[in-house]
Image 1: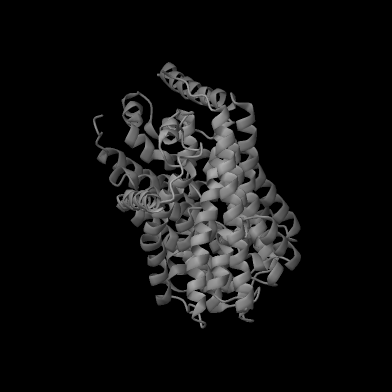
Image 2 (image 1 turned 45 degrees about the horizontal axis):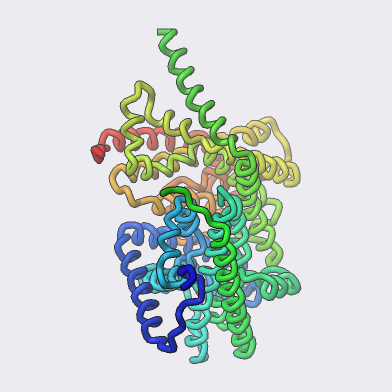
Length: 283
Length: 271
């Protein structure tokens, strides 16, 4: 029997039920872990709400008397901002350095000894976290907003399903990006550089600062196809406010699906390369 | 006593020097940080330019006029963030017990905390903010008078003091509620976002609360009006633009009082 670790091909079993059980248990633990930070959740909701007001007023002012900007009308812009503020924490754009910290301290060896692939294990935990955030961080701003602004409600029923799929894909894509950024810790002593680049790039290119449709058409289309960033926030929001007709909506979600496959494969590849050179000090 | 004061100054200088040496020890990381910090402010300005790509005016203000508001806010926030911004890490100091060590030393707690963690990497952002401010003022076509020349210098200074007060005042919340980190952000970073646009953009009670309840209108909006020689669309008299330094002094006094009360309230975790 060769060496046994998480990324060596496991003894193949055709039974996928235990695999799903494990995945579900990890996700549930992620959910429970984040549900214990109650004070932080309340503080976060207040902050998201304040920024919801700020960004919403600015975008409504951009729409001005004409009432439209970048192909969005006023209720669409309001929904874009408020759901965006909630979704920000669901996809968790910023502030995840858990993997990098564990690599730096050497704790990551414990992850490698487990009989679950680290990418799978971290993804399961992250989906659990996202589930908690969807209830505790996405809902409150969306409930508060209608008291102060006219929001846009989808008019086509498939939109709701598409949004759910798109938001889930966004969580997985964002997780994969964060995993890749964190995994640079296998090679670099200090991951601050990649983290800074990620923080800056993701914020402006995912549609958080302004809807990407405000940019020239060639630019945002290039961003959409060549980078995963618009798939993090702009796509689910565009799908929800029905910025485009149904076929375009489906295409956008298909692009997301492509990024899910590419990025998860990249995570596994990077993880395999990293394990070949990982040397943890200690005895 | 002259020797005592000299000793205190030397101690502060030693704290700052140790910080500077440790932060610049890893040169590449430090260089990356310098660049990254410029990026944050650059994107704030870029956002305004993108917004003006799809509209001709924002809340009744043109791009050039809005840039004066953004420039003032960016310049002042970046400088305040450099000088006092790290006070927002106080929950960590409370949790790790570092605050106890600071309190038993014969130096002021606030200056120690600020100097012990002065983030030199943010220097680049402050310089960039200043460049935005100068560019905005030069390109705005201001009708110069001695008064306005004075205001160009005074307004950013007042705004730095104001943002600094907000940083300190919101940080004191952590003496009562350790997990309040993000809450402070809604006033500090929220204040920066609010002051980046003319207050006419906002509406209702939200504007009343942030602009006049908390005083953010005096940071960039009213001084910008005074510099541009524009009447306030909301009807306040022109001299209000000159009230900024007064408002900053009041804010600083309130923040200092809040800090004193907070630090007296502080009870060590004893760990």
